[in-house]
Amino acid sequence: MSSDLARLGVAEAADGLAAGDCSAVELVEACIAAQEAARDLNVVVADTAERARAAAVHADQRRRRNEARPLEGIPVAVKDIFCTEGVATTACSRILDGFVPEYESTVSARLWEAGAILVGKTNMDEFAMGSSNETSRCGPVRNPWSPVDGPSLVPGGSSGGSAAVVAASAVPAALGTDTGGSIRQPASFCGVVGLKPTYGRCSRWGIIAFASSLDQAGPLTRSVADAALILEHIAGFDPRDSTSADLAVPDLHAALQGNVKGLRVGVPSEYRLDSLPSSISDLWEQGIVWFRDAGAELREVSLPHTRYALPAYYIVAPAEASANLARYDGVRFGARSMGTDPDELYTRTRRDGFGEEVRRRIMIGGYVLSEGYYDAYYLRAQQVRTRIAEDFRQAFQDVDVLLTPTTPSSAFPEGDKTDDPLAMYVNDIFTVPASLAGLPAISVPAGLDEAGLPLGLQLVGRAFDEVTLLQAATILEDAAGTFRPPTVAA
Picture 1 (cartoon, rainbow, N blue to C red):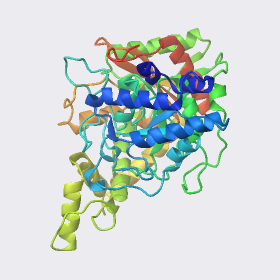
Picture 2 (picture 1 turned 180 degrees about the vertical axis):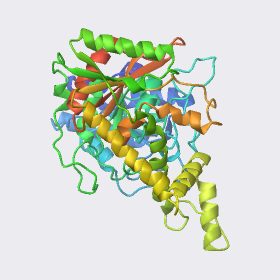
Picture 3 (picture 1 turned 45 degrees about the horizontal axis):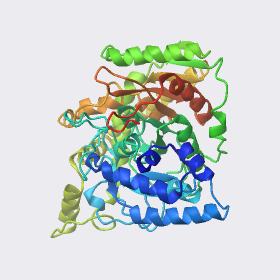
Picture 4 (picture 1 turned 120 degrees about the horizontal axis):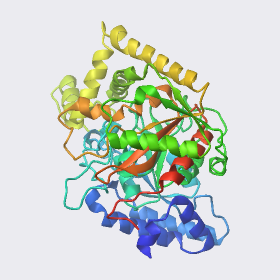
């Protein structure tokens, strides 16, 4: 019974709690046990079991008093980049060792206000910089789809822990953040749904910053409906975040029932790479067939500046990271390494506190912002970003959503790309353009490759049109079915 409860999705668990089929205490205990059973995956970096148990007792009391909130008693895991009051938050970096926030991020606070229960902080790439969850100071996460007797596969990154804990059926939903694909790429690698909302739809207040003009919170779940349900409760205006959009949040869950007949689905020609594996190109064609069979209209579209998206991103994001991470100096924030003078203290603290990938991106960012190179690199990248956003605006005059692959490959073995940063960065080739344009995008598990590993298809929508995006995503989900790792399959 316990393992069965841990496999429930958000909506299923909510229905079971409302019907009295299970209690919040039983549900939380099931998730705690499932996380313990999946300890070898290294998905949880801050254990909140006792806090969760106390919250579950409170949730059951509220339900008995007929005071249940929409997510009352639903367990949720949270990426270690969200500040959680009274719970260690380190962004999986040594430089934040010992940091326990005295405040809660807006997004996580909204979940707790809706009745959800924190059941663990999840592993991630350090400061969200990575595509494989191998840069974490807490060690790599093992993808639940890894063969029992084979090599350990990466879960993707940077929200690899959140994707893996959901895929392993150890929690119904988890929060992640997406800067250039950090929700969608691990969702594809782990066979779960990953939703990046429109930039500004969810508050960034209380999220440890990587690249402030790109970072956006979103859910990882086992169904599109669950992603919609979680987004409803974390989205909305926040006056503490100057980039937060003052727009009403629609009833996303109800909107999933909408008819998609006549939906115009665009297929970007620039995404048809010669190097794309046949398993992914074939799945993409299958997605086109699924939409056509559902009554949608398929149209070829052009996004001519797509080829510049990856290099532009890897200028803009490191530049913003170098500015955001300048605050970690051993004096005001984070851990401190001793030095004989201020310069030595700063140097040793940042050398000891930051991992290799974070140091690499700080140096790249400092270089492109330096005198004599700002115009040649950073300013030019921002101009390219504007052109990319304009390409999307033009395309959305003729179509309602865009259909692409999520990633250029399935999950790869741990250590396979760690010595080649450029090969690692290519993992973001399909996800970065939507991030640069600030558009909502979702990865839906759509099939398996020749090795039996999950592959996702990505949908990109108009700004703040998550309704249409989610409606379209249900078409893919209904046609493809669901996927679970063989070791945790029902």
